[in-house]
Image 1 (cartoon, rainbow, N blue to C red):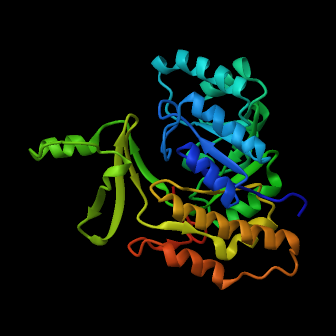
Image 2: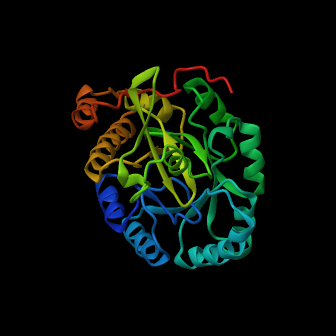
Image 3: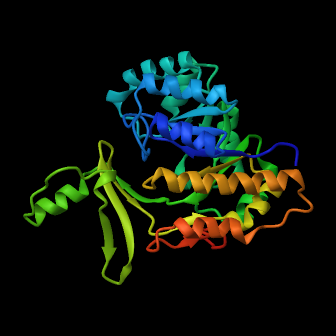
Length: 309
């Protein structure tokens, strides 16, 4: 393998950025809730400027999430925002809406584009289509299994990114469903319904599984009841030359994310030092198990399942 895969973490503050870079990430994803969704924190432009400087000082990269559902009223603001990002010198933006691609090409042509269509980025042909439109990376659907990912990579004309750890989004609505539910029940809606509230959705048939749910300016988000952890088979993805591994930090304490990043950094460096002699170490997994929420299972996600769309 010629290039060391990138280790990427989403950051919600300058403190997160510094901590995750120190823990082994060599790319961080940040953003503003107006334009990006499911971020661990919303950062104004001045903080993104400082985050970019901190990343670049370490030889790392800074990406900005622009994966929101862009409405007409956002487009003028989007152009101004993208121009500012270009001036800051961010390395890339994540997008799914062509309006972002047009804005970047017009106002920040030096910024790279990472196509992120969530669960619909499932094949190399569509990925290469966006590559020919200007994207340099596809963020592969988390619903793809290991064979689909590894068999797709040789046919890709652009980089590929895969989520290797953390929770995933399983439902989104622009509506305020929790607030509406509480109002329907006649319960007072007091305080914050956001990430800090610690709300869960529980199904009667599966009472043991808790699905984190929160609301913000972009609507309602329901997250998975378990956490992806592909550490044990990370070498398969490295052998397939996947370009970027993302650790999802959302709804996790910083200390947890730091430990996870250190473990994945160790695994990546160990493989790159000697691919043929690489051996997975159970102690790496033990370090994560030790801090894992006992109510959240570590799973392979869809890596070894056949997803039916």
